[in-house]
Amino acid sequence: MTDARPEPADRTPTSNPVLRRALAWGAALAAVVLVVSAVLGLVFAGTEGLVSALIGTLMAVVFMGITAASILLANRYASSDVFVGVFFAIVLGGWLLKFIVFIVLVVVLRDAPWLNPVVLFLSLVAGVIASLVVDVLVVAKSRMPYASDVELPKAPTDD
Amino acid sequence: MDATTVLAEINGNIATVGYGLAAIGPAIGVGIVVGKTIEGVARQPELAGRLQVLMWIGIAFTEALAFIGIATYFIFV
Image (tube, rainbow over all chains, first blue to last red; front, top):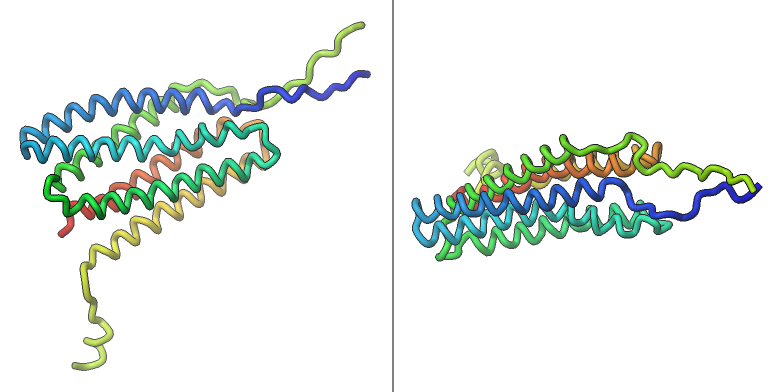
């Protein structure tokens, strides 16, 4: 009897394609939201509105996308012995870092004279909601097998 | 000034309390989502990929509230 254990194959979790698709579609919809909010900002608040809308949408999309990106980054260590620890360290550490940066940005940008806070807030909310819509659509349309990361033993060869 | 007035006195902007709440709520939410994912992966490691996607969508919805809550700093005076 030969060694029946499977070879240490590629252990990358099957969530990677879904997350990649979500990032790609998120970027595509972000471009649309960016244009729409920029036009609305320009119409209602002039150049300040335009800049605010751009910054607000970019902030929303980038910060919402960091979660998927951090999971993708963490999945690179899938074959590591301490994968679970590394995974949650990267994902939750990224989350914490993201919020610290977000709060600092909000505090810094609030009193900037070249910004319109209301336009910035509204475009940020629009970006967040658009990103959520993309996430839900991508997950709803994703096809993932129930036993996604199982490794079947190879059939014995007749020698 | 009587004791009640002294104890009830608050200085500064009351909206600050809201930012604290906007941090606590999603923190609890993400904690539950991630904790349950760890539990699920420990029970069935072969489901890790599916659970990661569910965890990600759970985190996305929870953190959306945090973003909107903290971003209200832009509109509250």
